[in-house]
Length: 131
Image (cartoon, rainbow, N blue to C red; front, side, top):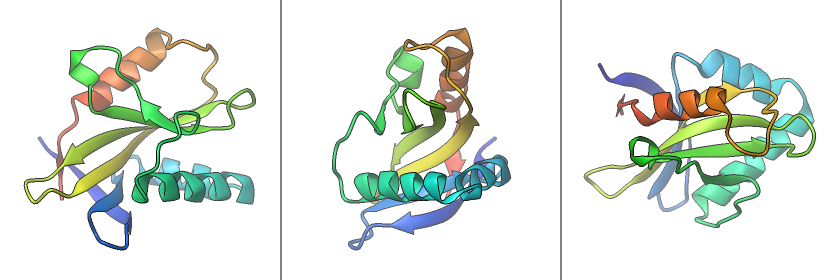
């Protein structure tokens, strides 16, 4: 069954967009809105995605195996809270690049991905979305 998602933002040329998973949107949005620090970081990461820049310190692939090749993570406050929003990248038939913010994971404890993170990443890797 395909999951539903809501549109958040698009690039000026409409070739890149960011969505949020409907089932997890309340938790993710509450996290982003809890203080201006989180909101500013999220907006900065959105700019990086929508403008096509690369910054692996803030947004990078989570390429742990073949089932999760389209999974990425937004990285909040590395070395501090170390929270993540795991995302699914999709390119549509029309060539639009879409990032869906899928699952919030608070307080990643290790530098490498633990069993908990690997389970979340594989779960997101299996998600199919309808737009």
